[in-house]
Every structure is written in structure tokens, then in C-alpha cells.
Image (cartoon, rainbow, N blue to C red; front, side, top):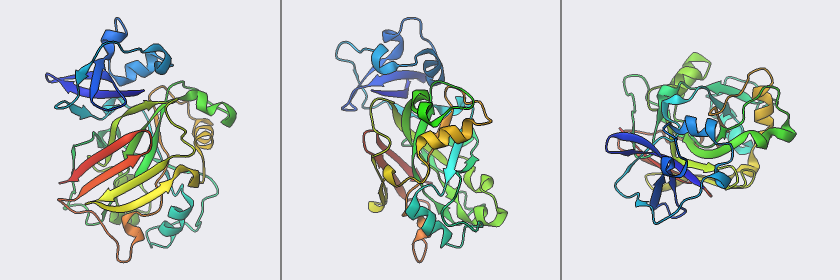
Length: 289
């Protein structure tokens, strides 16, 4: 099941989208009394695939603006660096990695502020006054449904509500200059997300294809089977001392093929188009402004 946040008559609405991506139903018509946003839905409904049943023909999605599914109500946005084997090698060889490890022995976890989040179709600002080395990173994101602290790997998937796509846009020069990742990852609009959330039962996150194109050129093409630390390990690691809450997002890392991995590097510039597709979820499209 696909659940999206859209704009209808200048109002934000949470909707169910059919498998064709062509029609939608308002959640409040399916769940009597519901008046909230996506976070409210995550908190209210633990198993949307079994509880939310659409009826009738729905309404056409064409012409409606798709917003980021979680928007700025996100409490925590956790991201993981160097989490694909081949990407860890390309990053370590790029000159932008300040660590001594090629393949990490534990997850490298950092964060972005919620103010970076924008939806599919939104412009991503190039910030030329701040950075000249803007990069893309196609990533699978996990939406937490059931919170908890000290979650064991064996129980981790029971805490997952759904999945979406994130582009972890990065200013590489800032990342290298400051020796930490927060500033280079956190410029406004640097977290495109969407186009919607698919519920946890919709895909097998351990074996799905992830691809990224820049101006029609395929740059990244990998499978989540290449993850160094899988989703249960990430949930166990983060929740060990931090209580995860419904709506928290864990972004699992990017595969090989980012701009810094080329010789010479292929950084983004104003006018570029970035398209990211993940099997079973959909496609996230953004222009660089």
C-alpha cells in the first residue's frame, strides 16, 4: 500500500494511492475521525495494510502536488554513512574521507535537520555561495512505527511502519572542510523525500534494486543486498541508548556511483535533473536550482 501527502485546495491531506499511481482516496474517508498528518497516521495505525481499505474509483492524482510524505513533523532523522561495500571503497579512495577505515566496523550515524526535507518535484537549491561540490546519494529510508529502546535485531522489523526514498544531498567541500558531516549534509532542501511511503509489507528491503540518474545518465545501480549493516542492525544500534519514536526515519546509506567516485568528480550544478528509483516504491524526481 502507498500512502502519500498531497496538496488539495491549498490544504495538506494524507491519502492512499493505488498501485498504478493514478488514483487516490482521502484517509479521513477510510478512517473515521482522522484529521491529522502522516505522523498522526503512523501513531494511530500500526498496520495500515490490513486496516485501511479503499472503496470506489478514487480521485485522479494527476495535477495534485505530491509533498514530502513526512514533511517537517519529523522528530529524528538518522542517516548512515559508508554503508554499502562498494561505496565505502569509492568514498575512502576519494580524498573526502577523514576516517582510517575503508569498511566501517560499526555504523556511522549522523543526522540532518527536518528543515532539509522537500518532496518530489521540488527544487533543490545549489547554494553556490556556500558550496561548489554538490553531490547526490540515492537511499532507502525506513519509517519507524512502533517505538522503543534497546530493540533486538530479531524484533527490529516489527518496529518498521514503511519505506520511502531519500536523496541525501551533500556539499562535499563542506564535509571535507569541517571534518564532520552535519554542515555538509544540512543545507536547506538537502533531503528530498518521497514520492510516498509504502507500508512495511509491500517490499523486501533486504533485496531490492536502487538506481539514480543525473540528466538521464545512470550513475547508481545496486541492490540493498550490498548493505554492510542491514536494517535490523541499524535499528538495534540506534535504539541501544536512544528511544525510537513513531515517525522517526532511518536513512540506510547510498551505493557506489556518487559524484565524488568519478575521475574527475561529477558534481551537481544548477539545471541538473536527479531521478532516483527504488524497486517496489517508486521514483523521486528533483531539479537543481
